[in-house]
Amino acid sequence: MEKENQEKFQCPECESKNIRFRFKVSTKDKNNPYANVTEEIQCASCFMDIPANVFIFKNANDIEDNKKIWQSFYKPEHLKVAAQCSKCSQYYWQIEKQLSDINITSPDIFYQTYDTKGSGGKMVCRLCDPEAFKNNKQ
Image 1 (tube, rainbow, N blue to C red):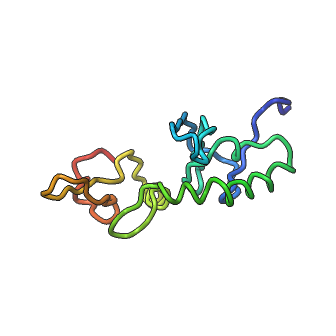
Image 2 (spheres, helix red, strand yellow; image 1 turned 120 degrees about the vertical axis):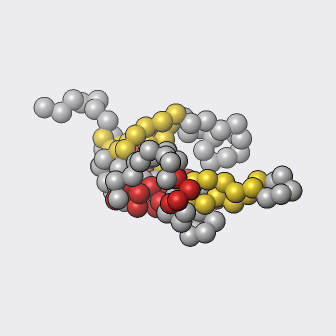
């Protein structure tokens, strides 16, 4: 028997009902769309990190509303700031999904290059340069 207050999940990106994990987040920028987001959920299917308020639903009517809110409000901002490989241009969730498909589950999916002038460099993913990660546990 299902509990009345049990949370129900559906990813507004891919419609999966499975979560990979939940984590707390915060932003200091009160003008950011994520200003009131306190928790995100990583989808177990598409690996996208999505605000919990649009991943959790109470009734079937919420699902379509959550998809619209995700697509129009949160996702555009997410795409602006999401980690992306400078070589293959894939986002972190695409890389994590591919690594998971080959049984590599590691939080280390990027390294950052540095230039001689001391400024930050570009992000390079584990798929583009697997040798750089060969000493890390998989």
